[in-house]
Image 1 (cartoon, rainbow, N blue to C red):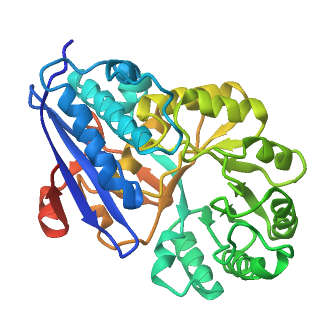
Image 2 (image 1 turned 90 degrees about the horizontal axis):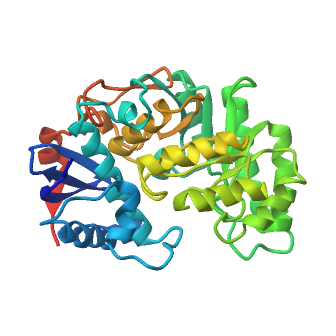
Image 3 (image 1 turned 30 degrees about the vertical axis):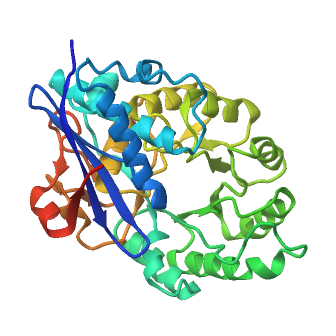
Length: 376
């Protein structure tokens, strides 16, 4: 069936001094509409411009199937991991999938795999909410305790603020603050809560092994991106073979091929595609199924707004294997107002709406109150 565009608009919310969320609202000529988040920090405006250019190419012709978008746009070169083009393509591919699911009157997850919406287990990323604090050990401890009191059984933080590249010869001095934060978190939540550690690629291969040995006694569920997986996948594979803590990562990767290569190298035990970057929701499902077939765990990266969380939940709901989804908590106190019906996160799970497509949209009331339209 043909899928023709009618119009599109861009929406921005300034969430905190550190965070703004960007969305494109796309409408087809049959009256259906859907939203996709394309946030990419300071480069979000450039991503939006690329999305606008892509959609302009399809003003008078049928939108292709999402897997064929690159070919139909005439892109001959490989799309670079982490690039603005990758984010723009991911956004349009997700929009196509979401509109196709609405065309068939199906919830997105049912369109993706035939499975109905179901509650999805979340882990609590406490890091973004901590930007409003001094990020002292006690701040980490309080944030972790609050997450557990809300029913989360797994929490994640990024404790190594003081570490930069290149690492100093003696790494112990600059990691002390991070170790203090992790110790405070463990003392706050007790022994039964799983703690995940995100490093944002701050370490080198040799220092990663040192840090892993020092955090292991604290009881860490995974060691996320001590090295950047895009540039150092082989180094990660060497680290993975020498440390006891499982590695996770891949948040900026694009396409099945990249994630398949991480699995083949043994770079990580858990891959973490982000639907905003990896090629969209259908590509995320392909990536997940490939990973599970290769004995690799799948856990979507999603420190994002409620539209991305819901779309990622649809990906998770479409899989045969139960997975954990990331959720950045306590960043703003009006988050659940931003979509309609409201986002419901209860006892560490997201309750999914049952309508067609995503089952929710950006709230027009909240948009007038908190957001703004912009154009190119």
